[in-house]
Image 1 (cartoon, rainbow, N blue to C red):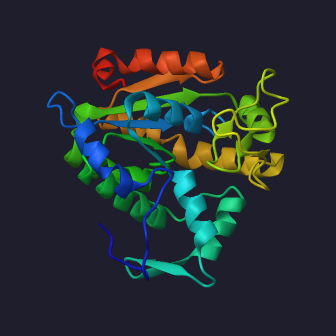
Image 2: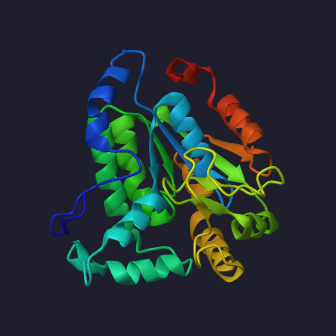
Length: 270
């Protein structure tokens, strides 16, 4: 792992690692339960976060969502705070500015943060769902050998959520999240009038700046230039890519993902 110097850097996520360690050990103590990794990727608005949330609850896998890791880091950062990786300083305020503008954050920093989190999750003997990483070829080249070593290539599944550019812009400009747990609520006619999150009851809000039409176009360009090439990389690594039509209702997308994952995952259902 790259060398990092940062003062009292505390890892946290939407799921508390320490509080789940005992439960995680019990959940994965069955010898038939090998630790698995599900990588979900696709364009902005394809429902990666929603599907990861549903799958994590169904299988009791740890939901590692890169956007939440970064959002949390930016929110809690002190004035002038920086993280040093491989001798280079990354200032949190500058990274947050890139993020708000729809530009991908520095890949070295993101890779360090995610790889560190993966180490903690693996030590808990938990299976893992990843959304938002790897997002660039550099991240994939750094993370995939590590994932293969820790989990085994045969235990890694790649889900590609396909969505048109037009659908991406529409979904993101109409998307809301809840204030409490940041659950993403995709726009449908059925939930258009919702004011509270159906999962935790907190107020639904829009992400300021991040989901404006201008920012979405930047994010989509970043995706096409820097993330989409991962399809070729995954194929070259011998990983089967399971393509799913993300333009359907959330329930139908989930059913298609479960079918694509196969019968082996039945052993993990709660």
